[in-house]
Image 1 (spheres, one colour):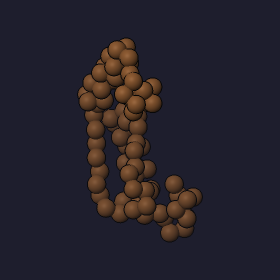
Image 2 (cartoon, rainbow, N blue to C red):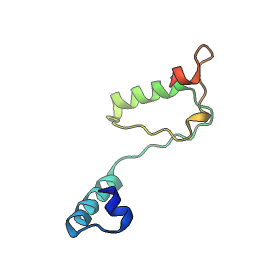
Image 3 (cartoon, rainbow, N blue to C red):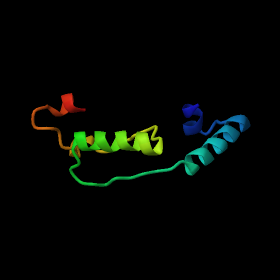
Image 4 (cartoon, rainbow, N blue to C red):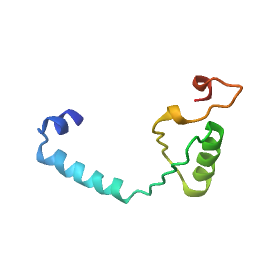
Length: 79
């Protein structure tokens, strides 16, 4: 569990599980788009395309405040 990892109290079984998962993450494909000011509809279209063509299964958006919301929508509604 996460609290074991943070506190340094992992048992040998947990350490083995973490080591196996670390390799899964290291082997996973990673795509980074650092386009400044990307719009939410543009990101949505990119994600849909990658789901269809690359089998994308997860999206992480860092610094959501920098994204551009459509003019007709508030940022909260757009997200």
